[in-house]
Image (cartoon, rainbow over all chains, first blue to last red; front, side):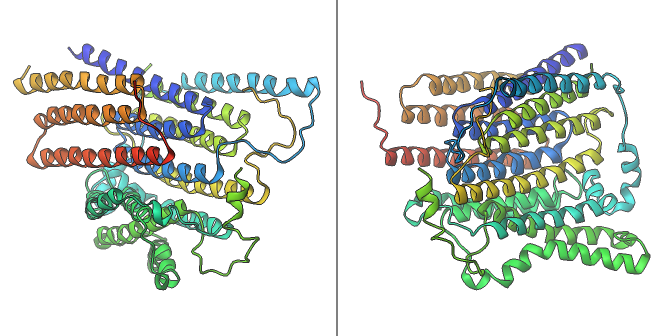
Length: 334
Length: 105
Length: 99
């Protein structure tokens, strides 16, 4: 009976992996860019199933929310702004035969050999390797969190998480310096059904995000997943026409965006000053500090991810007016 | 071959498929899609390496790294898309082609 | 095998024809609106059977209520999304299929 279960799970794994790989191939080979993006969203959801099979439940939550959901929305917004036609401005200079041959040759030799080398390297790896699981479990009691991944994220590798918050802000600054936010949907295109759905879903999203955040202390969950859920709620609100009042788009918005990073940095600086090592939480305060950081981080991550999908700075900034920047993309889209 | 190594092999294949598409496709959005698939392949190799332990739960350290990786990959996909939109706005192009590239289409 | 396991397996098997019907409708129906119709109804019903099967396997009442809530949310979201797609298609000028 045990071998039968093993055979069935092996078949399931094979089907899942075959579907994933063929879906990846199809989406990259598809001639229709919209179909490619939709297949990418489906790929992300199947990938989160693969994470569950591998026992990585936190990553599965994050992949479904961020990898499939928000990245999918982002790609659809980008597709709408770019259009799927391939346009290039430079004159096409015909290539010589040797030049024409070089690309298929390089790609035809390089990529299979990379794949082959990497797959052969796999055979050198041990089938069973315990990893850091035992170490993390042994130190779980003093970490301030009851769940391994949260403890690693917020305590053992807290420095990485702090820098990651900084990277999120860096991406946001880059986006804000490139372009001005354009409305995702026109006033007259807003569907009343979607408005009704948003009214129903937004309170549920907030509650579920809070629950996922709370659950991160003892089960899969945590700040990133909760922040991604909240940002999906914020994007839903944007899609039905909600925009921040102008009064809140200056200091308050920037405070909210950077709050997660600031709180984390402050705690790092304080612990550095008091104990000589940054982010070494004093033992009785560890759980509370982690909760504080995660709480502020969730709100910050939610707003950063939503701002990143909207894709531009709020329109009150000092921006050099280009040749009617809101009209020309439409003209050039032909 | 155990389950984890099977997933690691698939991650490598996904990486190669993404690399191929990154080099061959011309439209910027397709390149961004390809880079995302490469990232997913790499994450699969990470988690598969961590799943070699006892049954059920994968090693938490690679999980934390991949969690960080997913969020950062989203943010830089967004940066790439805003850059592509900006290029399109300034030049009217959706590719970076400067000559007739021999793409395997 | 326990009765509950048998019941779960039975319900899961019963959900398969619904998913099959939805996918068949997606592939074979002549029109966007017909395909939306098939997908939304058949898939949601199939999902309902899957959720029922999982409820039997649940450990506590909390999990049962969460599963029910998941199914209801998917129903609502699926219906709204189908409506949005059909609305957009109608605005773009898709005519319903006639003989």
